[in-house]
Image (tube, rainbow, N blue to C red; front, side, top):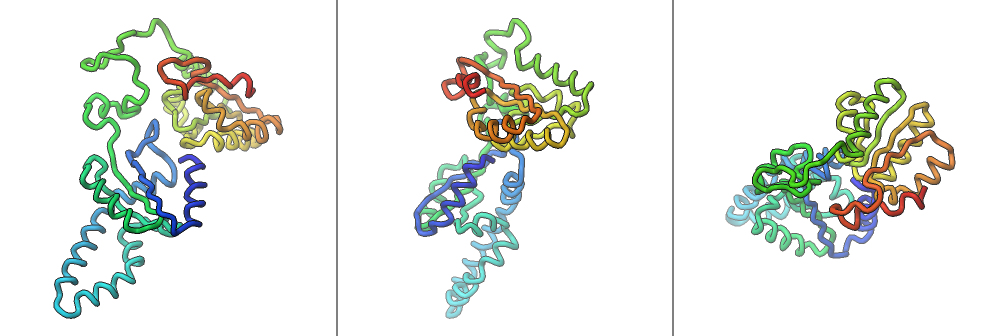
Length: 290
Protein backbone atom coordinates (compact mmCIF):
# COMPACT_ATOMS: atom_id res chain seq x y z
CA UNK A 1 0.00 0.00 0.00
CA UNK A 2 3.02 2.31 0.22
CA UNK A 3 3.66 4.87 -2.49
CA UNK A 4 7.18 3.66 -3.30
CA UNK A 5 5.76 0.38 -4.61
CA UNK A 6 3.65 2.29 -7.14
CA UNK A 7 6.59 4.52 -8.09
CA UNK A 8 8.65 1.39 -8.76
CA UNK A 9 5.91 -0.19 -10.90
CA UNK A 10 5.69 3.02 -12.91
CA UNK A 11 9.45 2.96 -13.49
CA UNK A 12 9.50 -0.75 -14.34
CA UNK A 13 6.72 -0.31 -16.89
CA UNK A 14 8.99 1.98 -18.91
CA UNK A 15 11.62 -0.77 -19.27
CA UNK A 16 9.59 -3.64 -20.67
CA UNK A 17 12.61 -5.64 -21.87
CA UNK A 18 14.28 -5.72 -18.48
CA UNK A 19 14.13 -9.21 -16.90
CA UNK A 20 12.65 -8.67 -13.46
CA UNK A 21 10.53 -10.94 -11.27
CA UNK A 22 8.36 -9.34 -8.57
CA UNK A 23 6.98 -11.79 -5.99
CA UNK A 24 3.80 -10.51 -4.33
CA UNK A 25 3.42 -12.29 -0.99
CA UNK A 26 -0.33 -11.88 -0.60
CA UNK A 27 -1.41 -12.86 2.91
CA UNK A 28 -4.21 -10.25 2.96
CA UNK A 29 -2.37 -8.33 5.69
CA UNK A 30 0.28 -5.76 6.41
CA UNK A 31 0.31 -5.55 10.19
CA UNK A 32 -3.48 -5.78 10.22
CA UNK A 33 -5.73 -6.86 7.32
CA UNK A 34 -4.73 -4.95 4.18
CA UNK A 35 -7.11 -2.23 3.01
CA UNK A 36 -7.57 -0.13 -0.12
CA UNK A 37 -8.00 -0.50 -3.84
CA UNK A 38 -5.01 -2.79 -4.42
CA UNK A 39 -6.20 -5.09 -1.64
CA UNK A 40 -9.61 -5.30 -3.31
CA UNK A 41 -7.98 -6.04 -6.67
CA UNK A 42 -5.86 -8.83 -5.20
CA UNK A 43 -8.94 -10.25 -3.50
CA UNK A 44 -10.57 -10.50 -6.93
CA UNK A 45 -7.54 -12.31 -8.34
CA UNK A 46 -7.66 -14.84 -5.51
CA UNK A 47 -11.04 -16.05 -6.74
CA UNK A 48 -10.01 -16.59 -10.36
CA UNK A 49 -7.89 -19.74 -10.23
CA UNK A 50 -10.50 -21.36 -12.47
CA UNK A 51 -9.19 -19.25 -15.34
CA UNK A 52 -5.86 -21.10 -15.37
CA UNK A 53 -7.63 -24.48 -15.31
CA UNK A 54 -9.90 -23.50 -18.22
CA UNK A 55 -6.92 -22.21 -20.22
CA UNK A 56 -4.89 -25.37 -19.63
CA UNK A 57 -7.86 -27.58 -20.53
CA UNK A 58 -8.46 -25.67 -23.78
CA UNK A 59 -4.79 -25.81 -24.74
CA UNK A 60 -4.66 -29.56 -24.14
CA UNK A 61 -7.79 -30.26 -26.21
CA UNK A 62 -6.75 -28.09 -29.15
CA UNK A 63 -3.18 -29.35 -29.32
CA UNK A 64 -4.43 -32.94 -29.46
CA UNK A 65 -6.78 -32.15 -32.35
CA UNK A 66 -5.29 -33.57 -35.60
CA UNK A 67 -4.10 -31.24 -38.38
CA UNK A 68 -5.72 -27.98 -37.32
CA UNK A 69 -5.34 -28.13 -33.54
CA UNK A 70 -1.98 -26.41 -33.17
CA UNK A 71 -2.82 -23.74 -35.77
CA UNK A 72 -6.17 -23.06 -34.13
CA UNK A 73 -4.55 -22.82 -30.70
CA UNK A 74 -1.97 -20.31 -31.94
CA UNK A 75 -4.71 -18.20 -33.55
CA UNK A 76 -6.81 -18.20 -30.40
CA UNK A 77 -3.72 -17.49 -28.31
CA UNK A 78 -3.47 -14.12 -30.06
CA UNK A 79 -6.94 -13.24 -28.77
CA UNK A 80 -6.08 -14.32 -25.24
CA UNK A 81 -6.05 -10.86 -23.66
CA UNK A 82 -9.78 -10.29 -24.07
CA UNK A 83 -10.53 -13.75 -22.73
CA UNK A 84 -8.12 -13.18 -19.87
CA UNK A 85 -9.64 -9.87 -18.84
CA UNK A 86 -13.09 -11.47 -18.80
CA UNK A 87 -12.15 -14.43 -16.61
CA UNK A 88 -9.15 -13.19 -14.62
CA UNK A 89 -9.08 -9.40 -14.14
CA UNK A 90 -5.33 -9.01 -13.63
CA UNK A 91 -5.44 -6.27 -16.25
CA UNK A 92 -4.11 -3.68 -13.81
CA UNK A 93 -0.69 -5.32 -13.92
CA UNK A 94 -0.73 -6.22 -17.61
CA UNK A 95 -1.85 -2.72 -18.59
CA UNK A 96 1.39 -1.53 -16.99
CA UNK A 97 3.32 -3.92 -19.20
CA UNK A 98 3.87 -6.55 -16.50
CA UNK A 99 3.20 -10.22 -17.16
CA UNK A 100 1.18 -11.96 -14.47
CA UNK A 101 1.65 -15.49 -13.09
CA UNK A 102 -0.80 -16.76 -10.49
CA UNK A 103 -2.39 -16.88 -8.13
CA UNK A 104 -0.43 -19.80 -6.70
CA UNK A 105 -0.19 -21.46 -3.28
CA UNK A 106 2.78 -19.77 -1.65
CA UNK A 107 3.11 -22.64 0.84
CA UNK A 108 3.64 -25.15 -1.98
CA UNK A 109 7.38 -24.98 -2.67
CA UNK A 110 7.05 -26.96 -5.89
CA UNK A 111 4.36 -24.63 -7.21
CA UNK A 112 6.43 -21.57 -6.33
CA UNK A 113 9.53 -22.95 -8.06
CA UNK A 114 7.48 -23.84 -11.14
CA UNK A 115 5.99 -20.33 -11.25
CA UNK A 116 9.43 -18.75 -10.95
CA UNK A 117 10.73 -20.88 -13.82
CA UNK A 118 7.77 -19.77 -15.95
CA UNK A 119 8.44 -16.16 -15.01
CA UNK A 120 12.10 -16.41 -16.06
CA UNK A 121 11.07 -17.48 -19.56
CA UNK A 122 9.25 -14.19 -20.21
CA UNK A 123 12.53 -12.16 -20.28
CA UNK A 124 10.66 -9.09 -19.03
CA UNK A 125 8.92 -7.74 -15.91
CA UNK A 126 6.69 -10.40 -14.30
CA UNK A 127 4.41 -10.40 -11.25
CA UNK A 128 4.31 -13.76 -9.42
CA UNK A 129 1.25 -13.69 -7.16
CA UNK A 130 1.66 -16.03 -4.16
CA UNK A 131 -1.17 -16.64 -1.69
CA UNK A 132 0.03 -17.26 1.86
CA UNK A 133 -1.46 -17.35 5.33
CA UNK A 134 0.17 -15.35 8.11
CA UNK A 135 0.67 -17.58 11.15
CA UNK A 136 0.42 -20.85 9.18
CA UNK A 137 1.48 -23.81 11.34
CA UNK A 138 0.78 -22.21 14.73
CA UNK A 139 -2.87 -22.35 15.74
CA UNK A 140 -2.73 -19.60 18.41
CA UNK A 141 -1.43 -17.17 15.77
CA UNK A 142 -4.21 -18.13 13.34
CA UNK A 143 -6.76 -17.62 16.11
CA UNK A 144 -5.46 -14.08 16.69
CA UNK A 145 -7.53 -12.54 13.89
CA UNK A 146 -6.66 -8.95 14.75
CA UNK A 147 -2.87 -9.24 14.83
CA UNK A 148 -1.77 -12.81 13.99
CA UNK A 149 0.87 -12.41 16.71
CA UNK A 150 2.62 -9.69 14.73
CA UNK A 151 3.68 -7.80 17.85
CA UNK A 152 3.77 -10.66 20.34
CA UNK A 153 6.14 -10.25 23.27
CA UNK A 154 8.07 -12.89 25.20
CA UNK A 155 5.59 -15.64 26.07
CA UNK A 156 5.12 -19.30 26.92
CA UNK A 157 4.70 -21.01 23.52
CA UNK A 158 2.29 -23.58 24.96
CA UNK A 159 -0.07 -21.30 26.88
CA UNK A 160 0.60 -18.04 24.98
CA UNK A 161 0.69 -16.26 28.32
CA UNK A 162 3.30 -13.47 28.67
CA UNK A 163 6.35 -14.45 30.71
CA UNK A 164 6.66 -10.94 32.09
CA UNK A 165 3.13 -9.65 32.80
CA UNK A 166 2.68 -5.90 32.74
CA UNK A 167 2.62 -4.17 36.11
CA UNK A 168 0.25 -1.48 34.91
CA UNK A 169 -1.36 0.20 31.93
CA UNK A 170 0.84 0.96 28.95
CA UNK A 171 1.20 4.39 27.35
CA UNK A 172 -0.67 2.98 24.35
CA UNK A 173 -3.65 1.80 26.40
CA UNK A 174 -3.85 5.12 28.26
CA UNK A 175 -3.92 6.99 24.95
CA UNK A 176 -6.56 4.59 23.63
CA UNK A 177 -8.88 5.28 26.56
CA UNK A 178 -8.24 9.01 26.49
CA UNK A 179 -9.01 9.52 22.80
CA UNK A 180 -12.30 7.66 23.26
CA UNK A 181 -13.19 10.08 26.07
CA UNK A 182 -12.17 13.12 24.01
CA UNK A 183 -14.01 11.80 20.97
CA UNK A 184 -17.23 11.57 22.95
CA UNK A 185 -16.88 15.23 23.95
CA UNK A 186 -15.71 16.61 20.58
CA UNK A 187 -17.29 15.54 17.31
CA UNK A 188 -14.55 17.28 15.32
CA UNK A 189 -11.89 14.84 16.55
CA UNK A 190 -11.03 12.16 13.99
CA UNK A 191 -8.20 9.62 13.91
CA UNK A 192 -5.79 8.50 11.20
CA UNK A 193 -3.33 5.63 11.31
CA UNK A 194 -1.02 3.88 8.84
CA UNK A 195 -1.93 0.18 8.96
CA UNK A 196 -1.46 0.05 12.75
CA UNK A 197 -4.90 0.58 14.28
CA UNK A 198 -4.34 -1.84 17.16
CA UNK A 199 -0.64 -1.28 17.93
CA UNK A 200 -1.13 2.49 18.37
CA UNK A 201 -4.23 2.14 20.55
CA UNK A 202 -7.08 3.15 18.22
CA UNK A 203 -9.12 -0.06 18.41
CA UNK A 204 -11.58 1.27 20.99
CA UNK A 205 -11.97 4.59 19.17
CA UNK A 206 -12.68 2.75 15.92
CA UNK A 207 -15.34 0.66 17.65
CA UNK A 208 -16.96 3.74 19.20
CA UNK A 209 -16.66 5.99 16.12
CA UNK A 210 -16.17 3.85 12.99
CA UNK A 211 -17.00 6.78 10.71
CA UNK A 212 -14.32 8.96 12.30
CA UNK A 213 -11.22 6.80 11.85
CA UNK A 214 -9.18 6.13 8.69
CA UNK A 215 -6.54 3.49 8.13
CA UNK A 216 -4.59 4.67 5.08
CA UNK A 217 -2.34 1.61 4.81
CA UNK A 218 1.44 1.75 5.10
CA UNK A 219 1.50 5.33 3.83
CA UNK A 220 2.57 7.79 6.50
CA UNK A 221 3.09 10.55 3.93
CA UNK A 222 -0.52 10.21 2.84
CA UNK A 223 -1.64 10.17 6.49
CA UNK A 224 0.04 13.53 7.16
CA UNK A 225 -1.33 15.21 4.02
CA UNK A 226 -4.82 13.80 4.64
CA UNK A 227 -4.70 15.20 8.15
CA UNK A 228 -3.74 18.62 6.80
CA UNK A 229 -6.71 18.54 4.43
CA UNK A 230 -9.14 17.48 7.14
CA UNK A 231 -7.83 20.18 9.47
CA UNK A 232 -8.29 22.79 6.75
CA UNK A 233 -11.87 21.58 6.45
CA UNK A 234 -12.59 22.22 10.13
CA UNK A 235 -11.88 18.86 11.76
CA UNK A 236 -9.16 18.06 14.30
CA UNK A 237 -7.23 15.00 13.10
CA UNK A 238 -5.16 12.87 15.46
CA UNK A 239 -2.47 11.00 13.53
CA UNK A 240 -1.27 8.01 15.53
CA UNK A 241 1.89 6.30 14.23
CA UNK A 242 5.08 4.83 15.62
CA UNK A 243 7.67 7.53 16.28
CA UNK A 244 10.19 5.94 13.93
CA UNK A 245 7.74 5.98 11.02
CA UNK A 246 7.19 9.71 11.26
CA UNK A 247 10.56 9.93 9.48
CA UNK A 248 8.79 8.88 6.28
CA UNK A 249 6.44 11.85 6.46
CA UNK A 250 8.97 14.58 7.29
CA UNK A 251 8.38 16.56 4.09
CA UNK A 252 4.60 16.40 4.47
CA UNK A 253 4.82 17.26 8.15
CA UNK A 254 6.87 20.34 7.31
CA UNK A 255 5.31 21.54 4.05
CA UNK A 256 1.67 20.51 4.40
CA UNK A 257 0.99 20.62 8.14
CA UNK A 258 3.44 23.00 9.85
CA UNK A 259 3.87 25.55 7.05
CA UNK A 260 0.11 26.06 6.84
CA UNK A 261 -0.33 25.93 10.62
CA UNK A 262 -2.89 23.14 10.37
CA UNK A 263 -4.41 21.96 13.63
CA UNK A 264 -3.18 18.36 13.62
CA UNK A 265 -2.16 16.31 16.65
CA UNK A 266 0.54 13.68 16.14
CA UNK A 267 0.63 10.90 18.72
CA UNK A 268 3.94 9.04 18.42
CA UNK A 269 4.03 5.57 19.92
CA UNK A 270 7.22 3.64 20.78
CA UNK A 271 9.29 6.80 21.23
CA UNK A 272 12.88 6.33 22.30
CA UNK A 273 14.76 3.02 22.54
CA UNK A 274 12.09 0.35 22.22
CA UNK A 275 14.17 -2.74 22.91
CA UNK A 276 12.54 -5.89 21.58
CA UNK A 277 11.15 -4.21 18.45
CA UNK A 278 14.68 -3.81 17.12
CA UNK A 279 16.74 -1.05 15.56
CA UNK A 280 14.21 -0.19 12.85
CA UNK A 281 11.58 0.65 15.48
CA UNK A 282 13.67 2.78 17.80
CA UNK A 283 12.05 6.23 17.79
CA UNK A 284 15.31 8.17 18.03
CA UNK A 285 14.70 11.10 15.69
CA UNK A 286 11.23 12.40 16.50
CA UNK A 287 12.39 15.17 18.83
CA UNK A 288 14.95 16.51 16.34
CA UNK A 289 12.39 16.37 13.51
CA UNK A 290 9.78 18.25 15.50
